[in-house]
Image 1 (tube, helix red, strand yellow):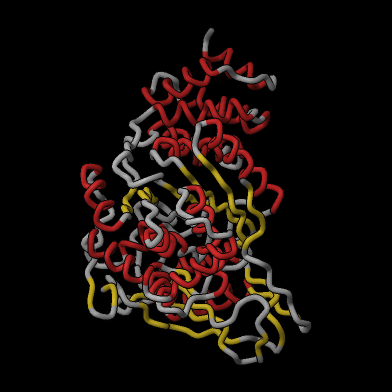
Image 2 (cartoon, helix red, strand yellow):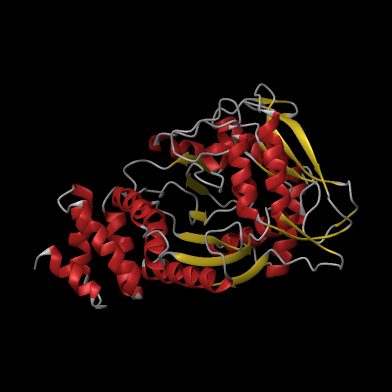
Length: 440
């Protein structure tokens, strides 16, 4: 059977066998299938979808295209967490040390930011000296020291996915639940964790704009996880406005420190502790506490110094530069412009993806992978959805690195773009719960 026959089979809406998917992924990995044929099959998948077994087979075959991480050195059940991305998402730097206080080991392989969503690796690289390229042979030592490893993804982890993602990006085939779910899960399967919680973001600042799409993706990934023998739970979280009080690399890590000293934003605390509860339960470390008792204990440990102690130990273990006051940052933020409310009222909506794009224009992110980052750039939020403001009250501010310069003309242009992101109401606005749904 030629590969053209495989393309035609999916074009006519038929399910592909494991063997056909395996041949496809191997051809993607070794380059024996040309890009135009790969692109044709990707488009057929976008148009006709995949059933749950096809998605699982695609994820497993992509995981098989590279090496698997061996996490047998972890104490108990090794866990992982994945977020589908958002604006102001500083969950991972808080979640990992919190889990460690319960004896839950985490090996987190993360990526850099591209477009309006931030990258976990970029956030940690805002700290001087912090090593995000950890050799796998050092993982056991770091787990023994702190229970935490955070590193950039290695090229040998699901290499077929990298080829497919690059092609999807230029062929209009990114927006496909089967392709998104199998892409994410292939890396999670290869990552070696035995328990996984998926933070599936939903709203204007997420890839999934609607609840229905977010639930469809969450269900698809949970099915793949379970068929791949990984304990998987998905938590659908609200990303219809930026999470917390900041977006930008140093700004978010400073907010992490504030949260760990009892000054956290309620939405950040709710998301972090909800994810933590699910992972602690999956790791069987809940010590017979009820879910509410476990949640309350997570909230306590996040602010009473225990998670902070683990966070500092973790930064030091990966060569992060520290003082008595906490991390030393590569670039400190300079507040270049404060933006005031144009009217009296209540903040009704903040268009999070556009906020993310403005942060990128300030220098906090990348449009293409080769762009350099201003680690001090970003946006601070002084008022969020539901808050009552008077005309002239500061609602947010634009920041850049203290050693950087931004033209006043650009700042004023970005101020106008900020105003387009905000919607006001003369009536009180209900604040959404940041946790939309949990799928187990």
